[in-house]
View 1: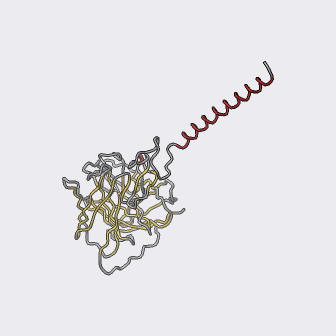
View 2 (view 1 turned 45 degrees about the vertical axis):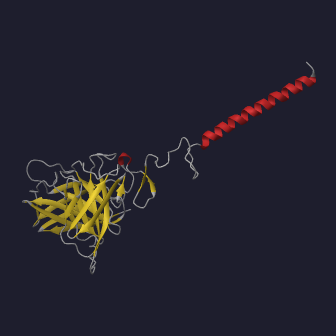
Length: 308
């Protein structure tokens, strides 16, 4: 074989290898770019137009957000959103009633609910200064419309919360809290938030809270109920527990439900009750403890300061 022939063959082999490498890089580059959206048509491996990636949702403001809730539900976990995981709250005041519906991910009014603490719906109303607390169990009509009959509302901005467990849809079996605001016309007289304290009184009863929860961390609160200096041991079951405890954050009205840990047993409950507390934000929280004695429901309130 001549030297010229050998050189020519090496040149051809080098050119072929370069061509093969170029083809490989082109293919890899095409794969790496697939699924990326640059504002034009969706890629073959990306989501089709009008569809969203799992874990994404659009709230009332139209902004997409990642899901951080249970079961892939997206949205706020502090009860301040009107929409979460495809479930949307719509409502309005009509005199002394608040009428509302919950729309499911399928766009239809939800009519299937799972009871939580004996009720399909827990409804709360509170003014922006955390006064006027109400906890109701509204009535649902056949078409899915709920009606909450409220006590008189003082003028000001109120927030209405719907706490429920869907019985259908992608969030079936997952607890949700949605809310919207409503304005009551008239001259507003603000009520100052009471200072943080470990005790509150109602109807002759004294409620004492012990515990020092930190923002975003699971902790425990211990509640003791007394009357005239004597421990109360005749607490009656209310919503399958001896006490119901909810909290609202000063400033933004974030919602938290503190879950009871003391089981209901034969005979009366008390004087000490334990609650699982997980309050997401630092600052002052207004706590509302509801308990029942002699067939009467009592609601005690106090302000708890949560450290960062």
